[in-house]
Length: 274
Length: 360
Image: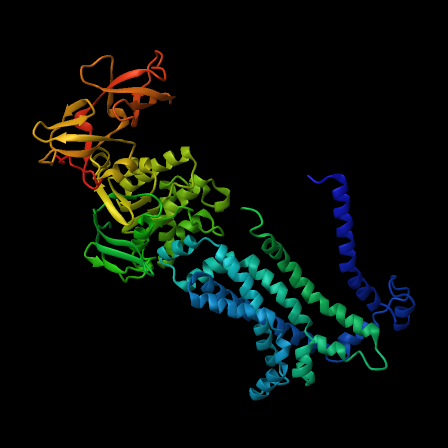
């Protein structure tokens, strides 16, 4: 049991943390309902003149629908591939005990230490070679590569924690490797998969760099790239920019809420004996 | 259908390290055969070779006439029960039991019917919709057993299935395993390090040490006529006393005391190791020739009283078990006279390798 003073301190620290986390979101959302002028005169309060101009502009004018869809495609396809390949690799690496498997594991993990942006120029050349520039298909392989190291790191640790006898038992019962992977490994990895998905989702959804260098065509832009167009050198339409960003946060919030229960299980797994 | 298992000259190596050098054993149809030994003796390794989880570096393994050396695990038609149960935590009890049947692509009605049958046999039918985490250890092991048997395997393999259970449940599950094994009538290979469990459950036991089978036999044979000193100490308790055998008189001499023995395969007088179980000493008020000693310590365990006795002639300590009596036990420091039940002792050669008593 915590003492009273410990409790007060804990709640105090958590409150500060919550404030730090929630304050920008609050600022983003309230300001998206204000006209440009009021944003500067009253940045943190509730709107005095309530307006939906920003949202109307986003939804009715311009191509933000396309941008959203592009971002959703890119994120969902990349995540699916990361989780699929990551869990397959993790199952293999965890079960296969040899020097080669350790080398491969370290090789994957080494990717955590090398920023992928160092390779931007080569990646551009590669995309030119495959004629993928200006399509969302240029982004997906890069994101999958980016997401692999951390995914393999997390998932391998989880598979290693599953009792080996469970795989043996499944084999004895006549299950093929595929069957074991689909019916035993994947369901038991759900918390870890959710962790990996959330972790990568944020990075992919918010990424600005690769769309910026790979994509110029209007129909292939992502939200992050689209929003940047609203920030002009001399003039920025803040209401519209903030409305876009608020809308852009919705899908990710929904995904987060869907995955968060599993995510928290994943974070605390192994902390206590079950 | 059940099978007999024949293993010829099995060899297992992990890299340069030879774990099993040469094991041959015949396991009979419908028999409960136990591999017993201390940890690291190779018993689980051998079991996993039969299951197909370990590669086989040498020798042949047969189920009936069928050689299984290179057969896939999933094609061997075996059932296996593991120490940590290894039941699937995300499936209900019923789904666990049905898992193997579903892999065999059987008709849905057949799957349900067969699963029901074994759920009832293992007395877990009422828990069929629960998740494993809601079951006790004993119930989980029943699920594992039902799952192993429901696929009608040719062979049932059990790897220390009772080690994770508490003492009381272990006795209960021991009985369950034995009953079910007899009822289903399936060739079973059982691995344990617990000699009492092995004796209670097995038709025959193979005692293993350092990757070699030291003795194969029924529990009675192994207890009464162990093949060497390792088996004598590993199965039950025993005292080793230095002794001398007089071949022409068929006498064993221990200090001043001697007694007659038959069936000894020794032609000449020789020094031997005399093995006496603690219950094979007799106490005497006064005897002409007896083994003299002093009680050094005494433990009252209810049914029996264990006493440590220092032999007078060579100061060796031996353990003696007597049924407890209502009167006061002999006090520590008391001088006593012992004799030995000559027909029950074993004599070993000085190198501990051979039991000199001829098996009848």
